[in-house]
Length: 388
Image 1 (cartoon, rainbow, N blue to C red):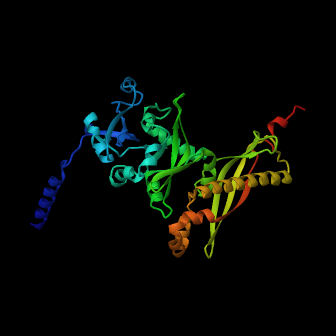
Image 2: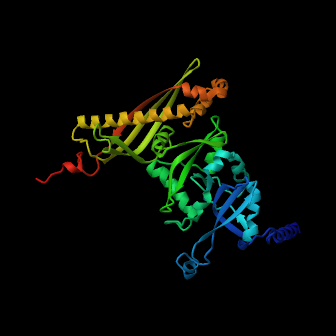
Image 3: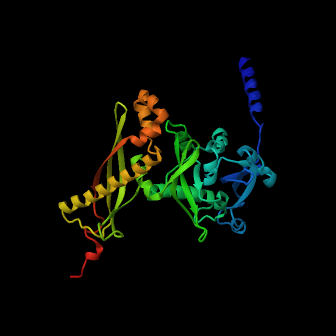
């Protein structure tokens, strides 16, 4: 009898579990690929949202070919991000869905005038946006960037994402910054965040990702040129791949040898004596010869001389970057975060005037170079080969 009652209760529970209590159809949503933030003349936020347009068939089908562009934009204005998002439905007829958003573009003028926290609060608080969505600063109107047609990807949102990742990984002229990365940086002890810059050429309408926007106190206070980013990535152990150009010397300023960097690891050591701070960077770079124009490596002496030239050039570039950051009083490298982790009591005393202490700190750089090989040819410039 108990068995029959148990089975009856289970069957009743199964009936209760069936059905859709809060069903939502796909046609009720518009899927966001990218979003751009600008500012109106009245001080409102101008939100431009890039939506994915379903083709109703496979990518190569007739429906896909006849549909034209696979995306479209909707603009809305409001004093707050969430109000602007809600107003999208006034022009669109669907609710914006943020699960598949790839990138967030913010006009540099907005970053200079408005706290980035006012913009990011919604994306950090809402459950739909993913922490992997990328955040980029734009030169000029951010909305203009969403009008560009993707080169190889199916949507512009995916195109911008792949460009940012590739620029950081292969050329070392940009930096990776997701919603999660931005949140961690802004809430660190130093409180400095870095955003990659994206530019749009008015002549060719081509996009390029290079340079860094520096955020401090919630606003953009400075920037870093693409030529300095490789050194920054090395010092912060974010370096993936890239190339080091080594000047050939006096009279040959435009002629340079090259080293393809396969790995770069830096150990940061801080020394505190009373109220003075010394920071030492110990960097090990491993690579192969990528180009050779004014050097030759045919014996051990040549190899040692080649590595010495690279070492001096890299150490000087490191010191030039640090000198620029000290002049601006911007601890972009995160030395303050390291002091907080290892010497919390010292950091408690230093935190209030850390900008001044960072400016007065002593920095030393020691670089070790390892050259694996000279490629598939011997260690001489191509121009030196002659027919016998």
